[in-house]
Length: 203
Image (tube, helix red, strand yellow):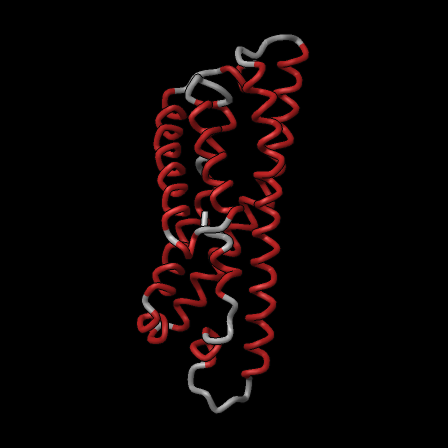
């Protein structure tokens, strides 16, 4: 019951910040063509709504995870985006570009593919338990939250699959480049990558 209905001020503060962040990203996804993808807009819009509902308060215990650790991957995604926006910088720093991409992929799989579904299963179990004994203050919100976490979790795996595809393409290209006279195979690789794979993971 406390994990679903409990109030914690630090969690409330984090949720307020994340609600604003998701709302901004939703507007940006609609405004900028490079981000204007149905799944990206859906993700940010639904995340902003769920975060806003968590201010009731609702599921603060679990919200600390959803607005915290999974966002670590975004820290490493920012330099990747900078390299995409500034090709000249990317060309001068191919190794750094590659390292940031690897760090992003590793943290994404740890938090969003590894931990996210585990925490979500516990969240659903606690919610069902609270609903069964009528201990949740917001039963409609509880049911809607469980429903929305199905597509949100599916998106984590979808983007994870895109990262695997991108990694496979990168590894294959690097393997083919081995022994090539090119002085910077990583730099050459950038021109061959399908950038849409990486853009799909912007969150």
